[in-house]
Length: 243
Image 1: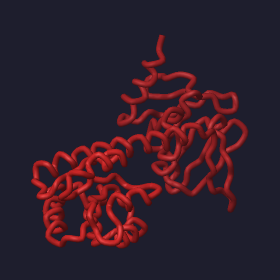
Image 2: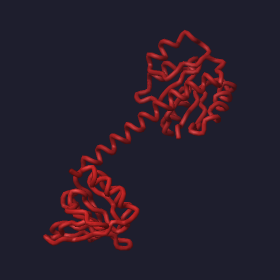
Image 3: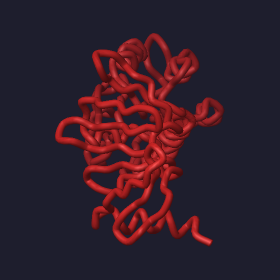
Image 4: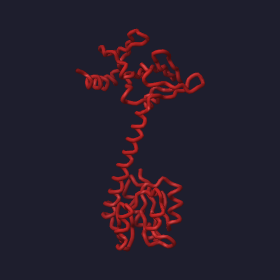
């Protein structure tokens, strides 16, 4: 969902823009503002992605208001004055709409804005994911304390009702947690769920034998079952690294 505010001192112009916004299911109009002061308060109160900004307004013009913002949202200027277009684009505005604004022209401008916002959101998600992958440990609550568990030490994780057991070379950690929640916190490049009751460290797989995965636990072979719902994805990973 893309949050939008309208900043315009003309009620009729606000109503037209609001009607247009209602045509887009992904747009959410959070506030209509009559001037820059109200718009400034709205930006502080809401997570605004897109601002439809008039230029000629009392007290402070849209141009000057945008210049005053350190981290402005995406902006589409809406104005009756074409002579501000160059300055508007120099301020990285998405588009510059001249009143009266037609629906088809509005659609083009909004599509450009939503494309940019969507790309930036994907970039942020990728960046966060990359940061998560760089971690080499996780903290889990056990024995009334937060225990640091290094990814390199984990052989496999076993689910037992409302608890999970993290099996490691030298110890095990039991924590009150679901398999699903723990699976979501582990890097997918290093861990794979192979059964509703088992998550395995991929680099600890010793062999795949039929419907079983073989690991070494304390020097002994341990065979873990592969669930039918997880078999195909696991075999794809194995085949990608097969000679």
